[in-house]
Image 1: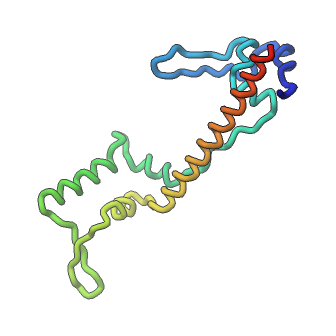
Image 2: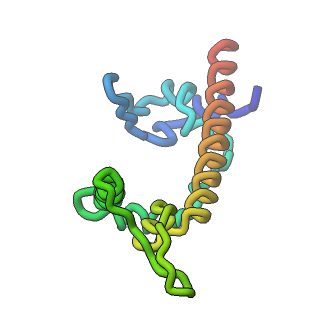
Image 3: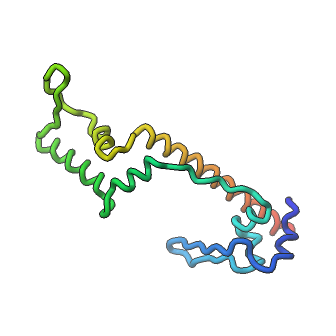
Length: 153
């Protein structure tokens, strides 16, 4: 066990004071020095542990902006394209030989229209997943530290 528990005894106020609201549960607020022992944010602060930083996600930001004020513009365009297919209406374009061919990659076409690169978006999703895994691991580490502290008291 780390030698951080003495900081709790000397503390005059909680390290974080964070309010956590979870649907269906009463809000919890880190307001007492005693609650610091079970607050993963306080444990991280007291031990000087770094939490992982959320990655930069410019493509996700563009996608969010492209969704428009209603929040569903990209979905609406996609549904319209699907509706056209259901009606037997096909999107086509000419190639260099002036031959007409059907456009099958509608997702790619939507990405081009909204100026969102699908490959970059996928890479950002991987970065977000890596961040979430690291964050969960950091929280778990702090919670184990708190449980160990409580079991020894």
